[in-house]
Image 1 (cartoon, chains in turn red, cyan):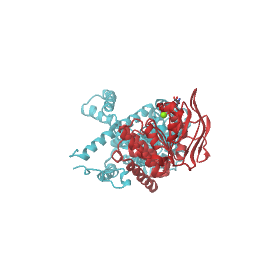
Image 2 (cartoon, rainbow over the protein chains, first blue to last red):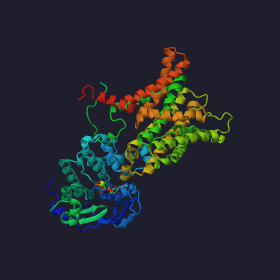
Image 3 (cartoon, each protein chain N blue to C red):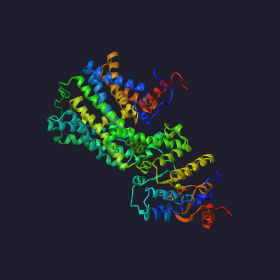
Image 4 (cartoon, rainbow over the protein chains, first blue to last red):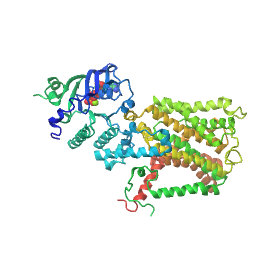
Length: 270
Length: 358
Ligand SMILES: Nc1ncnc2c1ncn2[C@@H]1O[C@H](COP(=O)(O)OP(=O)(O)OP(=O)(O)O)[C@@H](O)[C@H]1O
Ligand SMILES: [Mg+2]
């Protein structure tokens, strides 16, 4: 996909305060130590990548951030304040949206309904108003529908608006899932391997979308990705994990030179 | 030509979320409504009211209720009969305790009581799913029927153990009790069915409905998107039970007039409503009505055919009726697993594009 980001990206977000800080996170499943004392931060407006070999604990880390796993030790700070124990739907209400490594769409619902469902936390009309379909409920529905259409246009998925997503090909499902996360107008967007299983062309499209979201809406993004070319291209800073530990943290240029990272993950002889 | 629309012409979003996207549908709908409200009451007789229209409407309401829970929210329930019993006994207790309270209020309130009971029996759904939840609701079914039979307070200590409806009027016309005219029975059931279908339609087209469907399709993702699973599931149980409770109240007060819990609201009824929902189409309001009509009318049609036309002896006809109905249900499910609603949709799509299918 060439040099879309280039060196100018690397200077972004330096002076910005952290949107999210993870301090000394440790997560165990019975005897398995999935994350061991990992600390890093995600700055306002940056694209932050998390990389590492299979089983390194990357997805577990996203699950901790989105409130799906609860670490045994460590603190999660959101906008400078310690976030208390929270169920995932409360985390969503803070403005944190995500996609999943294995697509988790609502298969029997249409593309449009999936994206509308993404706006769940933004829709306020009461149960009673909806039951009677009062003016307020109807107006709210069309206002949100307009936003949903903007996202559909942005992702170029107009043609599959009314198609149940379970019947769509893999690449499109990934795109709809991104749309559903974007629909929440998140402050922090978490993407778990958004390009896994895609061909080169699809990867380029997806990278474009991610960069556009970051540029146009100023959305902070944390993503997990295995494709090194893409990661080096689009991210501002990278966290490297291996066996549940953090073994590197820095700008793409620094990570490329870090010997630990080369040994553990990149494995490319120099 | 039947349908005049060759593409997507809707230009505003409210238009697109209309109940009847094609204006032709809307007019046909008004025409049907006019026939149901004006013409049918003029020509209705006892047979049509008691054997066809009233049972179809009452079962439709119950099917609508179960469809909200199972079709939209994905939570299986085998407790429908038990919840109908709550509606019926609730209605009876309200009618006898407050003789001056309008019957309409009694019925709506018994729906509300059933909603409360539904929430309590919906609590296990927060921890268990699928087959295990079905077993838990089955327990509710047996418990509720047992409860109403075991405590004479529920049937006001009547010697027969039955509850018998007192006479009540709406606008001066009796709607319950032996002096009710068939048209009055029919109209009160139609009014409830119409209002509840409208309510169901509204709830399922907005964010409440989407939160239910999200839970149904993928509960983990639903939660991460901001759906509170506790709220969504209990809401579905409450709304579903509200509908089923009203169906039970109508079943007792308007349709039968006198019932006994284990006979009228046994496990058979739970399965019957489940059949209606599956045959009609999971997650479809129209399907709830179609499924109820199918299950109620099939035995009626068969009886007319076997006894009336072919002059079979009644006992043989009754027995073979079960076999034929059962076989037809199985056949139907194999041929059209998505239900009558899906069939109707396919048919309509064909008509809509006819005569140029490309
Ligand atoms: N729910 C769970 N229960 C038990 N163990 C788990 C659970 N989730 C993750 N693990 C374990 O935690 C470790 C880290 O898994 P994780 O999915 O976070 O890795 P990952 O870095 O995302 O790997 P991949 O690149 O393959 O997606 C693995 O050993 C995994 O088996
Ligand atoms: Mg992973």
